[in-house]
Image (cartoon, rainbow, N blue to C red; front, side, top):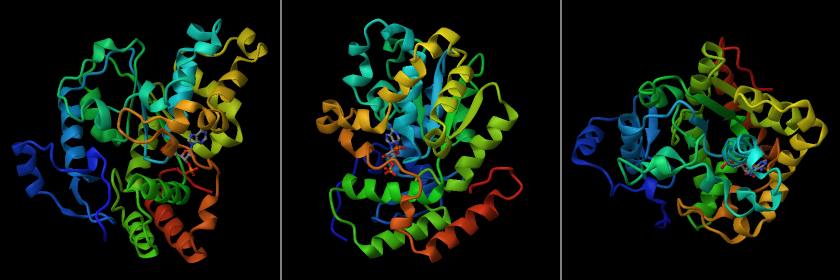
Length: 330
Ligand code: A3P
């Protein structure tokens, strides 16, 4: 395969000697575009990414008021980032909605990734500069994140968004084509699909990731909220109100009557965000073109890409892996 463009987190030029030693003892392989990938405690990471995850675990200590938003890549991260930000900061922009930061900044720049941005090249990013409550995001699964959050004096709020594996995969396929600035061929599509089915995918296996947050939400309802992308599309008002309640900032009757919930949904809608100048032509701080985060935002786009056999295969795998957990995909 032709060399492809790689973002920093996929490279291996920011890895300490200690982490190199660790990597040499880990199960390793190459992902579907030929990049080294390593399995650390059951989860797959690229080398620089693993370094950043270890640094998050070691150095990040959330403040009591911090909120952490978690997801798998292509699981609805951008949408949930914008919703959490809009819900939490709604009072500040009620009088002047035209200066709302979501109109001039990409959601990823308002809600920074812990491992892909803040700890990607620093062990001690200046977190004090961020307003409180600070909203961070991560793709790390819950057990790995707990290594960091257990240092906090009180548990912080964690919101997770989960999306069905087939749409997550197809969204990821389109994203990777653009990210690598090349047209990946059909055999690469099949390699990537095979990787998903085997759990061999960055931050994966998929089922371990969703299960970590699913179980976490059952064990600690007060501090871990499990949301589903499909439900957010189906009943957005219900889900945004649920989110606000979980974050201890429920919508008042007056707010509901004055249309505050609908305004937030409109502001954070795919149509609105993707049409903004900043999201059409800007580049996020992690170096990815803003427009790459917006595509169709539908449920069931996988039908346009996967054969019925592929769909059946992956559905059976997920069903088997989730059996007994109470987490079900339709
Ligand atoms: P599709 O590729 O299926 O369209 P992530 O934010 O985790 O990278 O996921 C990207 C997916 O979420 C893409 O899905 C994208 O279109 C969709 N998305 C981005 N912003 C959205 C929004 N405001 N509302 C609904 N879906 C959104």
